[in-house]
Image (cartoon, rainbow, N blue to C red; front, top):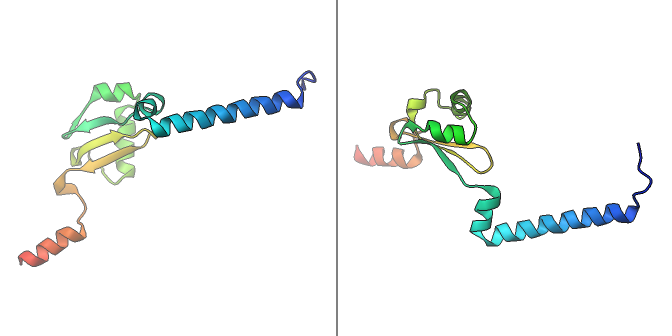
Length: 116
């Protein structure tokens, strides 16, 4: 049902306050790293040196199956291939493979050519 007691002015006032509050938070998080960490959080290491941190998985409320699914979506089908996994502030998991499982780069190819 429609509440006829609320005027257009009250609606505009609410939207203006919300916009100003949003702008204020954006400015604060842009200028202060401490405010950004408090309001947005910080990255959390889930796998370090190839070892899964079950405590950190519990902290971010993700189970091993979800971590494995994210790994497969990034092309890693075995967790033993991963050196580091980091849960970013956005909720996305970034993976750093162990050196022997890392994709070949142009730099690797140049070094191989010059050594032969």
